[in-house]
Length: 159
Image 1 (cartoon, rainbow, N blue to C red):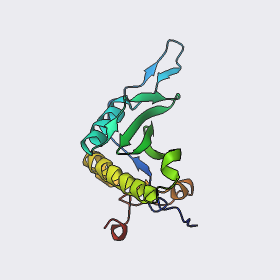
Image 2: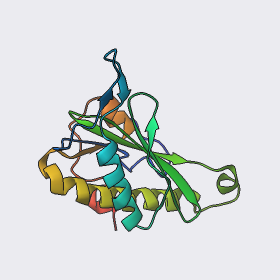
Image 3: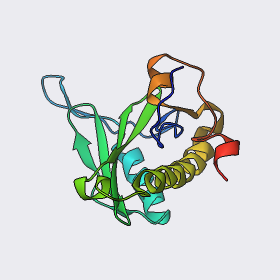
């Protein structure tokens, strides 16, 4: 697998898992999906993020297929998108801010640490539902359908 010099490259930001949840999808009269499944799960994940110290915006529908949680911790913003159902896929996307990329030497390392903290909190919550199904990936690992890891970072990198 190719590597990059990006400090966030070692953080797995794709989390795939199975969970027994309420089927809260809604369909209109013509049989079209009007609200995707996962609203309850997205709300629960937002509670977990809040407990980890993130400021949470309201959970909102992401396009026609998922749910979005916009978060902020300290100076940094990120977005978690939940989609699917069997399995679920949670993707965390850091929102890079122009002022952070100009002259902020610790921005990338701080963002990496933030993603690790958030994903650890999510892994602990999701793991309590169906721990054996939780798999973490980098974008490349997910795209190449690798086996996945049981944690967002390797133990050797979490120190």
